[in-house]
Image (tube, rainbow, N blue to C red; front, top):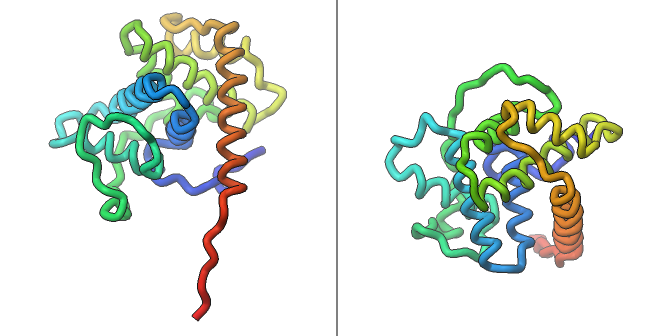
Length: 204
């Protein structure tokens, strides 16, 4: 089992590891148009996770700032707002509070269930299709962390349909291709990070 304590620390814990994984996947997308669409989708779902804060001044601006922070300012896209520069963005962002609710499945967790709910509320279109694939991948990873034998596309499709009361149906053939691409992209990203030269700390 892969415990969260054994993973890289999250720069914005309130969004959860599923959103962080989506951001890291966006960093691997080579096509700028597709990368921009993925970023737009991620920010939309980030906002849907905290609907009670939509009236907060500059809420959307803060979401894009948070995306930049989670991407370590390496996401090459057209930001709709001026992003806080990295040298000024080393502060710890104020946490976005959200009400705790009972979850249906412990292996998916509260934040992933919020993602699924937001997905069901999105209108039909490319962003919803993109998010469906991303959410299904996160569901598969969560199942794998809980029980590797449970990583079954049929179960993912059934759970997604059950959670959304039948409003979201997973295209299993497309998901299989997307899941494979996602795994390869994340593997390349992990390999690149491991092979990156480490800075030597000077001793006084």
